[in-house]
Image (tube, rainbow, N blue to C red; front, side, top):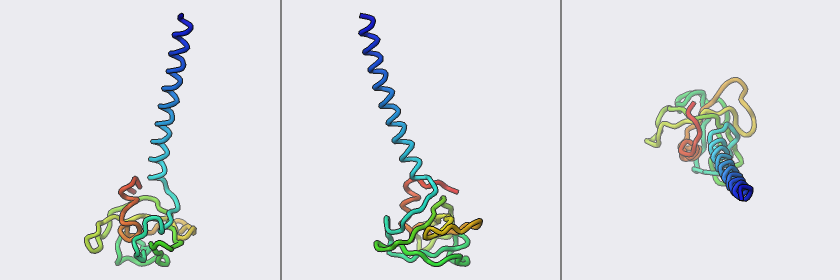
Length: 132
């Protein structure tokens, strides 16, 4: 009888451990992928805008790379690192993304900034990308 109780507890315990491990893994994957640095295709959440690549989170700052395009057919990418507060353009918010490259080319030691509303309507900002 004790053996049967131990087997039941063992199976239930093992099942509970597996369920908890799977839940923790799912949370880790969803949180990790949303906040991780990485290459993001601008055609995933297109805005229809050309996106300037600036030296600061300000449209008056110097451009440091060619514009990229957030359109359905675009093949442009950005290496998204985090978000910062910057100049609000036309009351669309002050979220800018700090990026480390465009179109699979890293910038090296310097960083650049793109306006979140033009990149993806701030989608990544609202879905877990971390603040710088």
